[in-house]
Image (cartoon, rainbow, N blue to C red; front, top):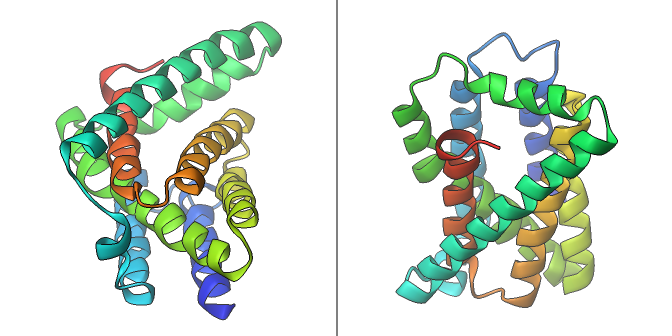
Length: 205
């Protein structure tokens, strides 16, 4: 169990360092996020070196499926943004705070980081390692639920309700997809990477 708990504690610390108001200004957010992505991805490789052979295929079906899922996610978030803005006065200001993290950044560099490093690394760690390990230890449903909740909760240090809810929604969708199709991690990596670039850079909501 410590092979699961220790990586989760490391991830929780990294998210605290990136998002908490006490530490977020120490380093550039995207530098810290990229550094965290490298750590998480390397932990995943070290703890589950066979994951690439077991779960990942980048054939045209997985690529197309990943892109399609990212489009669906963008649509869900567009609807969610309109609904939350209607329901809650704080919703849109909190969303703007999230987008404020990219202020002054080079959009091309940010896109490359999200597409090549940050998005794939998060998916490899949270679904490819954490959910996989928890599912094997308990069962697939428990692994899915626990991973989804933890993925959302590590964002709590931002004290941004909309960010936590966004993490809960995408975590649930990617987690459910991995629960149903554990051999489609490649599609989820593509989806996470493409969605990140779309929602943060190309087509912000």
